[in-house]
Length: 219
Image (cartoon, rainbow, N blue to C red; front, side, top):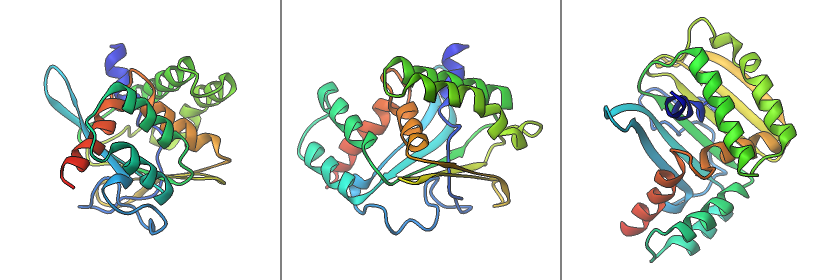
């Protein structure tokens, strides 16, 4: 049960809308973000035993971060040492965009509890402070209260845009109707979102990092 909750929990922080039929992380506008293969990390999460698809996730970063990732990855093969270097680089990104498309229904309680678990993991790994962990733990149910009765439905799209001045979150259903909009000030929410995905032991960390090496092999 704990693993199932953790799989769902990293999904609770997101921003700009994703257009129906588009990539899960293709909200507009995104012109300021990086270009090229090393500007994005992407994956599909599935439950290991039953092979049930849960979601598609893509993270995009600014050009400076993309250039740094290229210098780390290009011409090399995946290793745990490079994984840490890549994660450290992405966590320093000042402009990021994450997009999620759900491929199955998720209850509101699973969503909130999972988000709390993910924040706890980031705190345990010393990627966020105790105060930031408590802020997220105590705020999630309140922030996403408009989704409480409905839950998360297959096809819902979450988008997240984090910049130095704050984090914008928008949630849309599969038809493009806006379900929720949230803004949080300051750089911490952006960092916490990334830390939740990329903390050691996260089900997202290694697949996201490996996707950069997949891009490198196709260069």
